[in-house]
Length: 249
Image (cartoon, rainbow, N blue to C red; front, side, top):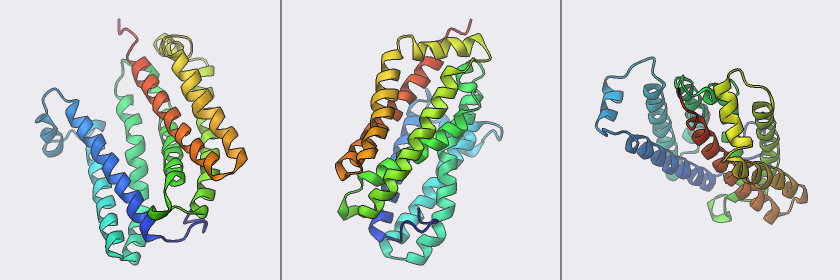
């Protein structure tokens, strides 16, 4: 939005968004370490990384993003506008890497065919745009929210939702290359995850938010943002759980 001249610089918004970025990246890192059976082995990923492993690459991407976002936050708090302007684009680019590296990590799980989809990097990119747009819509006035941010968020949420639903259609309506992937997809569309998918992701998290955006009022954009975030969360849960619910044998 700033690149296209739709939004100007705003110190409060910079502080708020970089704070949220740091908080959720920290939560992500804690969950990743917590998931390890032997927690100290995370240090081996850092100090003796396997260069071909996306687990190691992802760790360094998250560290790079945390470092850039942290310096950006300090510059915004201190009021160094020129420094935040210089840091904005590197932080955004590494932020997208932090959003999509999971697709390549999943790609190394060769026993889970649903996760091998070539749509996944693009889909995570689109979901990052959708979640970022939703957060922008939810910013209160004291944290940099305004009619300008709401207007940008409304357009961005709408475009992201259309792409998100389009990718879902391509992924789950088209034939899959293996029986393993097809079985996992049926678990989402017609199996135990079906109600969550159709109600939570498609209806309440996709179609309804798009309909609310047509109203263009403040409350409708805010509600659309909340429903969109919920829809992404439900889909990610279905995607992760269904992918590993297929027997390997």
